[in-house]
Image 1 (spheres, helix red, strand yellow):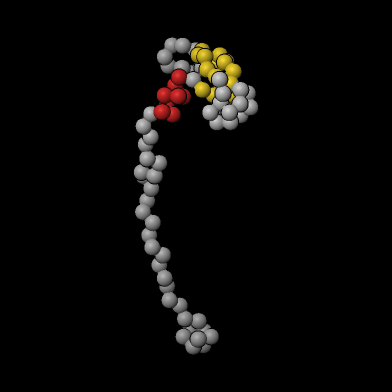
Image 2 (tube, helix red, strand yellow):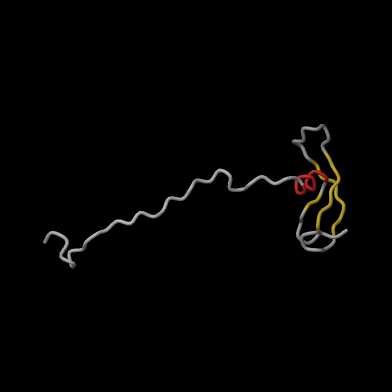
Length: 79
């Protein structure tokens, strides 16, 4: 098996999850020996699922406000 990220060798490994809520503390996955990318059933399911929009809660940008100022050199200020 080859890594989809870097196309190098992937090895099978047993991972331990101490905070798992499904009752199983260990699971079998695959890890790339070069880039360290991990593949298991849950990760693959999340990667192939529908994506939510990234920028759904961003604020609208306001146009810049131009302020006209007169300098003393132009004769617009008080001496």
